[in-house]
Amino acid sequence: MNLTKIFFDTNVLVYAHDKDSSFHTDSATLLQLVFSSKVKGIIAEQNIIELYRVLTNSVAMKKKPLTSVQAVNLISQTYRSGIFDVIYPNSLTTDTVLQLAINGNVTSAKIFDTRLAAMIIHTDADYLATYNVKHFKDIEGVNPLTPKKILADLLQQ
Image 1 (cartoon, helix red, strand yellow):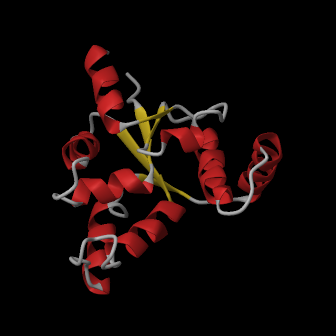
Image 2 (cartoon, one colour):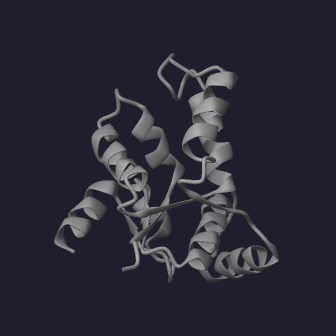
Image 3 (cartoon, rainbow, N blue to C red):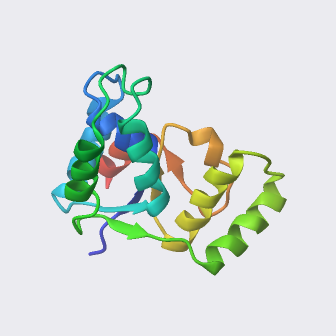
C-alpha cells in the first residue's frame, strides 16, 4: 500500500516546534505521523532555510529563539535525517514557476509560494499541509489543507 504523501509548508514545521502556538497540537500530530512512518513527509530545501530563519528570529519565536547551533541541530536531526524526502529545485522547477507566475499573475514576494507550489506539483504529493491555504488554493496540482483537515481526512481512510 502506498503511503499518503504530505508536503509540509514551513509554517506547519514552525508550529510543530512551538508549544505556545494554538496550532501546535495539530502540526505536531501530523509531524508524528511522519516519524511513525504512517505517512510520507516531504519538504523542500527552501523550507529548511525558511525554518532556520524563523527559529532563530526573536520576534517570530516570541523572544525564545534558538541559537544557530540549536537550529542546525534540530533541522539536521529532524528534517535531514532521512525521515523526510527533501527536494531541490531544478530547471523544470524554474520553468513551472514562471508558467505559474504568468497563469496566476504573480508579483513580488508571492513568487516564493509559487516556487514551492511548482516543487509540490513535481512531487505528486497528496496534500500540502499549510496554514496559508489561500496562497495555494487556485493552483492546479496542489491540494492545500490545514493539518486539522488533513488529520480528519486521514481518519476517514
